[in-house]
Every structure is written in structure tokens, then in C-alpha cells.
Length: 163
Image (tube, rainbow, N blue to C red; front, side):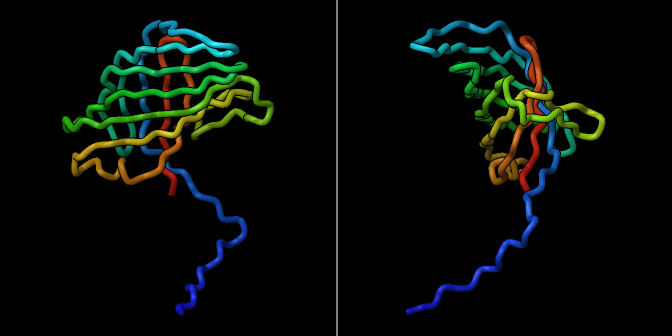
């Protein structure tokens, strides 16, 4: 019988860090009402294009869409679209998250001088990327967190890799 290896303990105060990778600015068309059930509304928001800019990735947003389910003031988001990197590589993104405006514990947050979230607003995403482009495989091997802000015509999402 083998003895389990001793694992080093996580030291007190340890917290994963976030490193800014890039920002997506997606342009939105008016939402399309799909339907609703008891206490729920479903809409589709077309993504018509946009930009990708940051230290780790630059390019454009190709068309796609976001399916939004709203229950009791909370939006559950499920966006699917493509990115075209400056080198021509195509990157698939599935970006799920939540948006609501009633969180008294959500502070305004800043990345340097840029305000990336408003007080009381929780707008976070958890993207997953797919590509076989060698220069961009790091996207498919990394966990990211997205901090989003926007309005009815555009959403900006800053993607941070979890280190």
C-alpha cells in the first residue's frame, strides 16, 4: 500500500491574481423577444461586430449573439461569437455570466483610471475559448474572468487571466 504524498498547504492570505489580457467591445443590435414562462423572459441580442484590443490579443469581433434569460431582475447570459485575431486566426468564444443591478455589496471597481464596474451592479462573465491556431492556444488553456459594462448598443468586457 502506498502512502499519499504530502501536499504543501496553501499559505494564509493566498489569493489567485488576475492579469489583464484584452478587452472586447461588441456592438449590439436591438434585442429580439423569444418568449417567456412564469416569471421568466428570454431574449436574443445580436452581436454585429466589434473590436479586440489589449496586450495579449488584438483583432475584431465577428457576428454572433447573446441569449438572455431574466428571472426576478437577474439576467443569465449565454453569448456565442467569434473573434478574428490580427494574424487572421479565428477564435470561438462562449461567454456565460450574470448581470443584475441590486447587489449592495458590489463596489465600483477600477483598472487604473478606467471604471470597469458601477456600484451596485454585478456584471461578470466566464469565457471559454477554442482555437487551433498555435499563436493563440494559450486562450484555450487558461481560465478567464470578464468584467463587463455597457448599454443597449455596445458592451465592453475586460478579460483577465487567472494566475
